[in-house]
Length: 144
Image 1 (tube, helix red, strand yellow):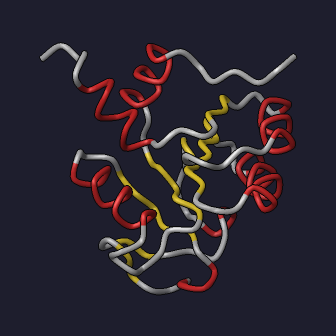
Image 2 (image 1 turned 30 degrees about the vertical axis):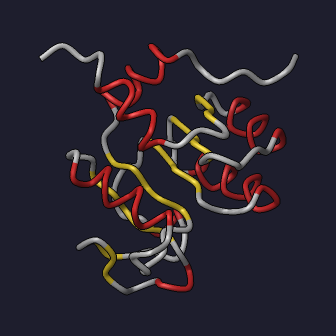
Image 3 (image 1 turned 90 degrees about the vertical axis):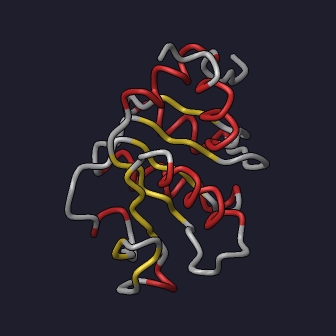
């Protein structure tokens, strides 16, 4: 069966209920999309945990950056991925290993292999969608 993203209502529920968001591939450079999207989500009240081996130990958006999902010392509900498709299957395995509930591949990123791995471990998968855009769209329909 072909992959299908959750409905907008399901995405809204995910975004309303999510706790910590680990962002795999979060750059420390403020002109990068991963930084801009994560900054906007943080300003909306989401807890952003940076994951990037090239920036491990540094502080990004006021949070310690970790080399891998396995190193994050607290629960992660959603893994937001800013990596090329060929790296996503490994990220899905790491996300499953830490018990994440949602694997979110950013706009332009599609990996059926990653989706299969995540779904086999009971995770909800969203691909080729921008979390910031989805948050903005669903925010518009939230009741005060």
